[in-house]
Length: 136
Image (cartoon, rainbow, N blue to C red; front, side, top):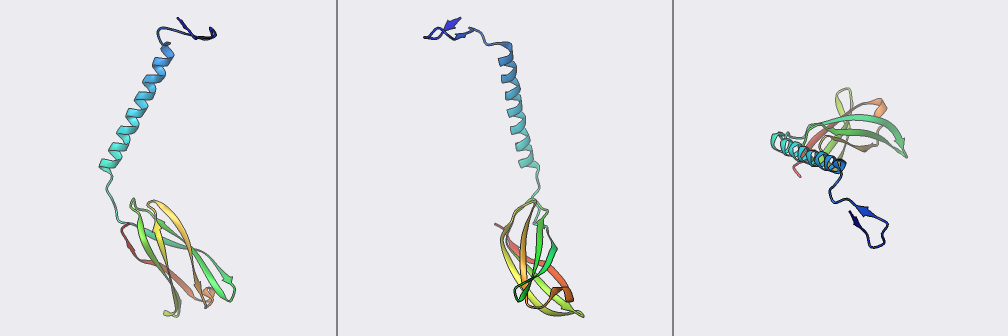
């Protein structure tokens, strides 16, 4: 046994069996984690962005109307410069259009936005769709 300079602490010459056990478990966990990450990186197939849009609310905003929506990217790649077009239709005719561009919509996540219309969207059919994106 070794003693510190103050004589209060002692240290065994050989590590305790629990230290070995914890060290081996930690090393095994690290090896498994690195292996899993490597397998994911090698086996994952990149898919183009899959964008789905769902209107969440329609409400007055001053002397206009705000249509808020969520845009979900279900793929494993990020889309940048995502342009969403909103259209108000009455009897099949487009009454008003609006567009918004998102800087990016991350892979497997959701972003939110809004389009402002002058006409009341509750008196018309609202169509929201992504019309384009670029690779980041």
